Length: 229
Image 1: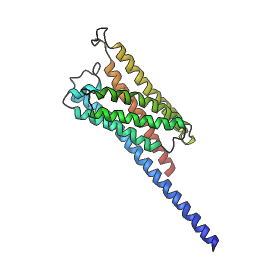
Image 2: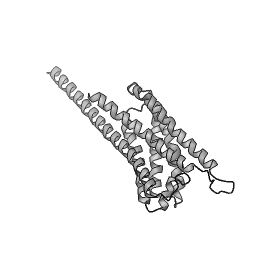
Image 3: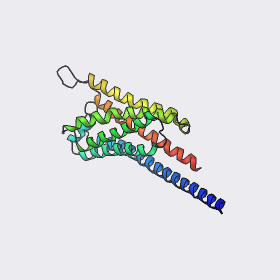
Image 4: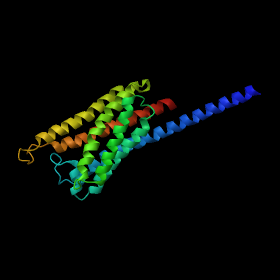
């Protein structure tokens, strides 16, 4: 009798573990899809702004300056989609990030989402927009490196190693290029240099950040497909 009860309890425990694992897998899959779609949407909104507001020279006008035009709501949607992608990615990879550095990276990714959310609410006319940029822009490259390195130490992520590390490096390239472009984009008197290109650097940064988000989310979905097949 006790043997049967023990066997039943074991079967029930196994069933509970399988159910919990399935639930985690479903959440991970949904979060990865949301992150991927949101990152793509962010770039679509950026491209739309380029077409909707051609009066803003993309070489010498920052993306945030689209708020000065007639389509500031599209800019807000771009930042919100970007923030959503960051938050969703945290849920998509949290179970695979097992190192302390990776977990710190998840915190930086949430900080980046906070900065982007603030940028959506407080546009370039608001005093808090600068703070939003200070929080959101440097946080994502830090998160990208810490999370990517952590994931590549997980044997299940070995096939994704090259793309994760290269896209993480791409985020730093975007940040460095933008700072260089800003530093060289103004004359000593504070006027815009005729050869300024910080606007393009700013757009490349947004592209690079979202490419990393898409790459990680895509690999999460690929892993889910390989497990189900």
